[in-house]
Length: 443
Image (tube, rainbow, N blue to C red):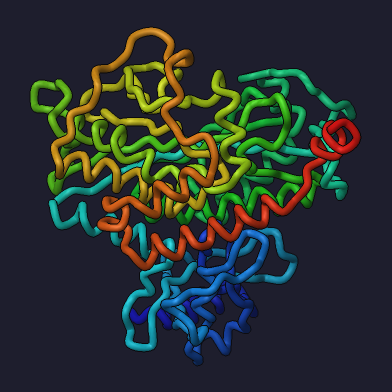
């Protein structure tokens, strides 16, 4: 059956008049068009390729590989066709891949970057499986951007500013919101598993069921959009900012990852159940190359504020079994489920790029047979700071990385670093409330 016939049948069955057609940009934001379904089924869909050179604030950077600001062709992925449950009128959405006029992939598209990394695994007869965990804060709606963010009032009519990790009652305070999140996710085939209260006030973590990386990146992309819309319906806001509240825990996106062969066997384990050389080399690759790729896991100046709360966020690249103080945790499991949890990324990342980067670092470790350091015992919180301390250092490391250029492509690395440099310059131009309060009349 042709894809267009599947679309037509779905539109008719669901009485759908409009469809949101979009791609994830460099920030992981949906960029696209709303199209009547009749036109969608007849016309070729185009959009400016420069969308991938758009900063988080909406500015465009100069792209030497696209001086003419050319169009690209959007190819809808029918497997991502879903309803948009928060809209009153029956509306669908679909995620698109991006092609040039010569029918070649647009190599700066984040979804394409992940496809390219998975192709490297496929060529070796391997299939990565991932299971992300995404943290976020519920916050009180406000329009004063100089004011500190505050937790919202729950159903009891009070604001709880205390730390209540894993509290069932704290979650129940926002039960109507949580119920709608689950309901809207189910309608979009977003396979979320457990939900728990995290370290910060009104901070939550959602665990996703393990699956193919493209599927999980699509689900996280849709989930972020969904949870924001649900919050609005409940007169709340949601933030995935890495460190939204001073002196509180940051929000992370932890990535559990393993690799299977064509027979469905976990290559991280040997036949006797012990860890394999692939497992050790994968960890070695993460330890060696995560500093070069850190710009993807910590893409904004605010991302590095999360690392300041190091009792809630590992700032090292050590590994250990069942130890949450390390950046690379190996959960206790049976051999079939042996995996590595990358705990470095913030929840502000683009999920496609974060999954691509962590899988790329592990892949390089296997190919180059990089031995990891010995696992540590006890707490790693007091170990030396292993990561870059600010975004400018990460921009430079990413730009100069031969390894990242090899696996992610020169065109992408150049465009991504130019975009991040533009965002950093804009950030540097802003005078902060601290400067006005502390420095203005005292220096």
